[in-house]
Image 1 (cartoon, one colour):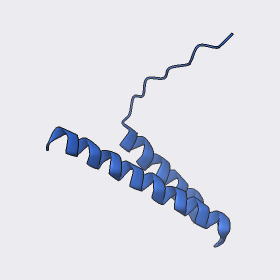
Image 2 (cartoon, one colour):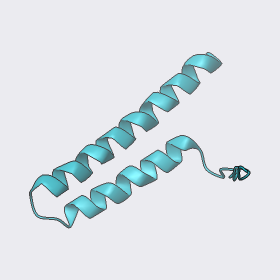
Image 3 (cartoon, rainbow, N blue to C red):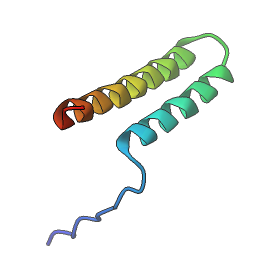
Image 4 (cartoon, one colour):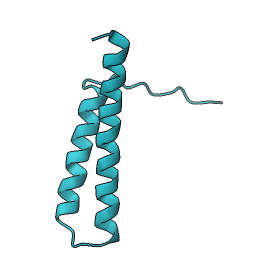
Length: 65
């Protein structure tokens, strides 16, 4: 028996969600002293920002704008 997959309809775009996540990660990193945990949070924030930019770039490339 398999469970039916839960489907969630997103109300915000992927770019918005990634940018919000990056901002949240940067806020958490700002509260930490310098160290490995802070650097890991900043790295995740940079990755989220890069993902948002790539997604936006791909959308604009496919629409021809």
